Image (cartoon, rainbow, N blue to C red; front, side, top):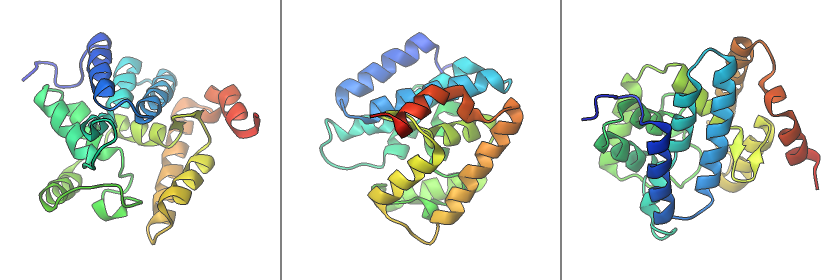
Length: 209
C-alpha cells in the first residue's frame, strides 16, 4: 500500500484521471473537473489543503471508468472506492463513497442509477454507518452540488436538474436540507457567501445565452 494514504500527487492524479477518461470518455469527466475546481477554491478560503481538495474532487466519480464508453451499468461509487483502495489512497477511496450521501444512509440516494448489487449495497451501508465525515468529505459533497459538466451553478439549479432527471422522492427535501446545511457551514468557514467565489460563472450559467 502507498505510504501516502491520503491521495496521489496532482501529476499522478491527472494521469490516473486520463486513464479513466480514456476508458469512458463521457461528460462525467467534465463534471469531475468542475467539482475539483470548486473544491480547490473553497479550500483556499477555508484553511483546507487546496491540492488535496482538487484531487479528491477530481476522483470523486472516477468509478464511471468502469462503464467502458457508456456501455452497461455499474455501481460507480463502489468501483471508485475499489480503484482508489487498489492504488493505496484510502482517503480518496472514502470520498468516492461518501460524496453521494450528505445523510449517512444508502436509501437516501436519489434516482435509480446506483447499480449496486446486494453485496455492494451491504458494504456501502455498513461503511456509511461507521464513517466519520471530516471537512474534506463535506467539501466534496458540497462541490458535487455546484459543479456540472456545463460549469458551476447554484445549488438550486443543480438540485432541480437532478430532480428533473431522477425524480422526487420521500428523501429529497431532507437531502436538500443537508446540502444547504453544508453550504452554510462553508459560508461561515470562508467568511463569505461561497457563490461569490464563482460569481461570473454562476451568472453566465444562470442568465447567459
